[in-house]
Amino acid sequence: MHEPSVAADHSSVFFFKSPLLPVIVCSLLWGSAFPAIKTVYQNWDAQGLEKSLPIIFLFAGVRFSLSGASLLVLGKNLKSELRLTSWRLIAGLALAQTFIQYLFFYQAVSVSSASLAALLVATGSFWWMLFAPLIQKTPWPSPTQWFGLMLGGLGVVLAIYKPGAGAGNPILGAFFMLTATASGAIAVIIFAKIKPTMSAINATGLSLLLGGIGLTLIGGQALWRIGEMFDHSSTLATLWLAFVSATAFSIWNHLSTIFPVTLLASYRFLIPICGVSEALVFLKTELAGWGLMIGGILVVTSMVLAKNNSSDRKN
Image (tube, rainbow, N blue to C red; front, side):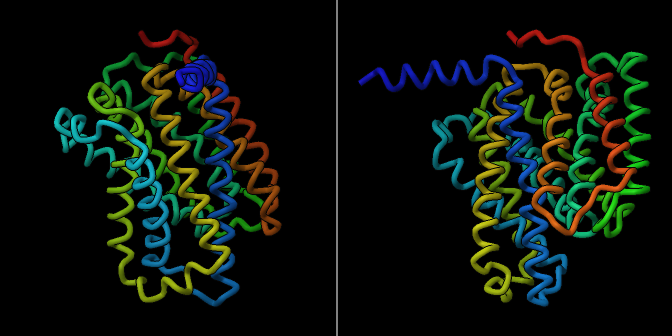
């Protein structure tokens, strides 16, 4: 009777022994979200369904509400953890990780190419390096890391300048995505204050559910069009996206309880690589321009340069 659980424990220990394997899994999952969301938008265009803000927010809200609810069903000791955890921190996490981040994220993918949006996810690591010293009083970036930040900024500018076919409005898309990644970086810092009293799965579930409900409410004007929004293909895409959120956020938040945030930030270069690659492979309407390619190389190089060399596990 005990052998399955022992085997599960060993496999879990192996999976989280190094951040590389779980980060690759998260990167592949999050990367798939870009072509999935864009495919739903293209499906709506083919139907003649306008991508109004209420429709976009309702689409996002349904995804995260489903994702959060499924995680809370799987979680344990929620009631006892709620008694020990500040509701202000939980609300802050839901606001930063889900509501604000995806309020802007979904607009970014709507107005620009999925490949550009995926590349700009890398800016989350840069935000962490700037916010952590201000909020958590960690050391400021070293000269090499500052150089990496400037190199990454140049890469972003080049990517926006010549993103390639299907770019839409790259400047507006970049603004939306930069705002989204800034909010996501703040969410990681908030989670650091929650994790002593609440498991990653419960904190993530509450964040996704509460944020998803908020997005659903502001998209409520589109409820009468929900039948048009969620045809067969859009429903399948939404279920996949809900799975992506539940799985990737849970893994990532659990990683932050094991490894330093600065170390995880250094591995985030895998997310834009997976996102850009999957967008270009699965979306025939997109083609990378020279700015996106060279900018992407600069952004990834900057993240490697900015990497905190400390790989020690947290005690």
